[in-house]
Image 1 (cartoon, rainbow, N blue to C red):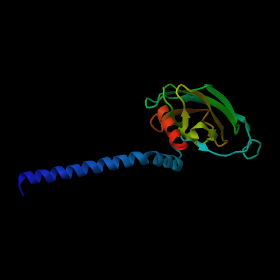
Image 2 (tube, rainbow, N blue to C red):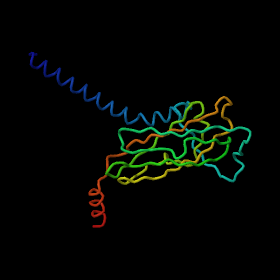
Image 3 (tube, rainbow, N blue to C red):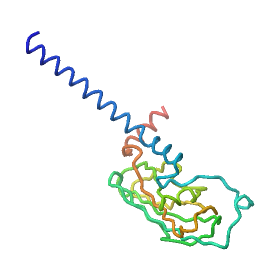
Image 4 (cartoon, rainbow, N blue to C red):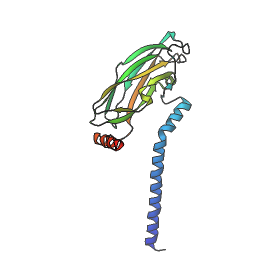
Length: 196
């Protein structure tokens, strides 16, 4: 085997290795969010709140008036999506088991329609499983038109199993882009195609 053949074979081998690495990295990145959700569900860590369905007028979760907990609301920006998000209330006190509703104001500051998904986080982590969400804008992707501002609700309660040493819970959100911006011309061409 000549040296040029050996170099060619070596280059081919490196191309295959690098291509395989790229494919594996893409697959890992694609599977990371579901794996993280599964990990949080199994271990109860990571600040992921519980989701439940509860009848407001039922005795399924009676209110415990003997203890109040402070719930703080925050939001963090994300450079990958030009949206602002802020809570309309900074904090509130709720009794354990008491259903409470509050809103975040979300604004698309770009000149294009965008779709985003809110990711919640609860701290301290030990309290995350005790904050139960009944309704939340984070359950579904949200679409905002250019410059649109919308109030988005979250309805929750803190269950009575909250450890006594936890007196404050902080609920935080950050939005992440779900797709590339959708321009008006793209929407119009899709409408024309569907009508023809």
